[in-house]
Image 1 (cartoon, rainbow, N blue to C red):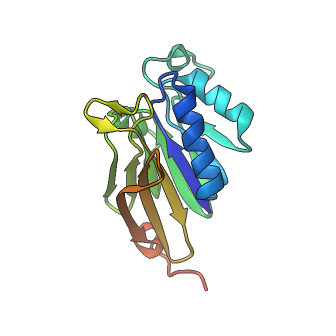
Image 2 (tube, one colour):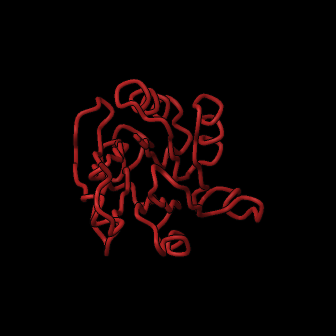
Length: 175
């Protein structure tokens, strides 16, 4: 399963849809995760993609709307995925999760964290923002390992990391 992850679009729909097209057409993502800022962008993405997991960002009115969860948990090919806009909000959903997805900082990052893989896809606010190139993440969930790649808007690899599935779940790889 391929999970596409993006964050901090801040109303830049052309960059968001450019990343979404790459995630779907080039990388084969079956689910897109939008990690906030702006909630309305995620709503536009949901109208154009088959499955979107979304959470609001700190600056969104939706973040203060009790009907919209600020963090959520999903399952992707047997792995528990926790997602929120920022790491502080993510902490509520992270217990037992295998993949921890958050944005907010606009700086891409992939790190092993106590039996989980922590991923920040960067931002899609502008071609460059806060000294960081626009980017998104591709999470390739394989039978034996999870590989995460942060890509620029041309699809080129900026960062790559991952863990054996056994390190995430404690279970031997499936045959």
